[in-house]
Every structure is written in C-alpha cells, then in structure tokens.
Image (cartoon, rainbow, N blue to C red):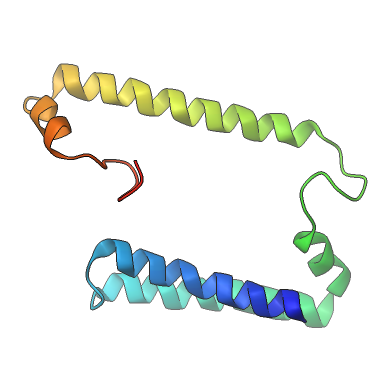
Amino acid sequence: MRRLVLTGLYLLLWPGLVLFLSGDWLWLEGWIFGVWFLALCGGTIGWLYCKDPALLAERFRKPGTGGQKGWDRYVVYGLVLGFAARIVGEEKMLVAELEGYEEYRMKVCYRLIPFVW
C-alpha cells in the first residue's frame, strides 16, 4: 500500500512539473495533459491492482531483478548514446546552418532541459 501512495505522489509530480517549467499555471493544454496523464496512469495502476496484482508487483520491481535477462540494459544504453549523438549533431547543424543561432547559444544557457542543461 505504501508503494501505491508513493506512486500516486510521483504521478502528481509530473503534471505539476510540466506546468512549473512552462511558467504559466493557467496553460490549458498543460492542464489537459495533466488530467489525461493522471487518468491513464491511475486507471492502469488501479486496474492492475484489482485484476492482476502479480503483474503490478512485477512492474514495481527494479529492472534486472527477479530472474530477468540483462540484454535489455544494452538496448537502453544504445538509445541513450544515440540520443546524445543526435543532440550533439543537431547542435552542430544548427550552428552551421541557422543564422543567429550562435548568438542565441551565447545568450541562452539552458536549451534542452530548462534550468538543467
């Protein structure tokens, strides 16, 4: 039960984070996304809790535990490296082809994740 409460708090965090990072608490699309996200995730968790608690318990486990194969870890590593390579390549392309992007880069510190990177 404790894990379900923590999951509920975690799910409430995401829509709030989207609205906070947007800088506009009255952003209608952000509220629509938040309601949709909570309904989808909460409904799925509630359905699993009632219909298939074993599957819900499996979803709450850490990846790589419980006799799972380890090959999926390499898929995730590949995706992260591919995403990082795309970001670097896209940044180089924007500097080379988009007029004024170099000045924008010097002026704006956080271009990918606000207040982080």
